[in-house]
Image (cartoon, rainbow, N blue to C red; front, side, top):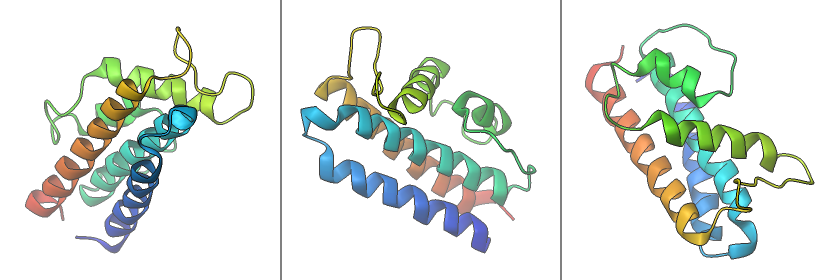
Length: 133
């Protein structure tokens, strides 16, 4: 595995560790969504790096996933990517604080975001070990 790929995975793992520390804090569900988005983004970028798919300067999970869909099939539905992208943008600034249409993500939604981020991370690592450079 390329050194840069490993760096992306280490950074994604840090986001997952933050999530694990705040997983059951209802006050921080918007921050959990932010770190879930970041872990997925970094996992996608690791795959892009390992498979030499070019530099992509975007935070859009949907755009990134479009580049690696054939490498990580059936890992994620675009609906989830859209939701996390929206939460990512809103969670970064005061005011909306990462709101869904009905307010902050619930603890249950947050747990689902974490599960998704972990699933993507693990699938991305497996894909990079299996067939990257």
